[in-house]
Image 1 (cartoon, helix red, strand yellow):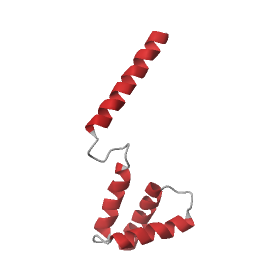
Image 2 (cartoon, helix red, strand yellow):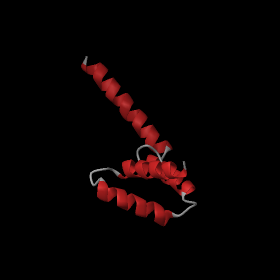
Image 3 (cartoon, rainbow, N blue to C red):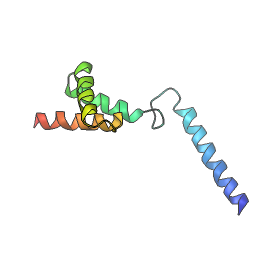
Length: 85
């Protein structure tokens, strides 16, 4: 039983290490790649206006102070999409 547990933990550690090695120079789920994805989507909607994006995120942060940056970016994206409809 203990040996099986050690093998499973070792396999998980090995997979994690390999993923970190593969993604060391690229955005990954471990390094905020999702934030970058949502930033890129918003920048497409704002025609590259990073200032507008950051102002929108700051305004949303005032309304939702406990939200993560990823959640705020999703909210801002939803606002821009609703405005286009």
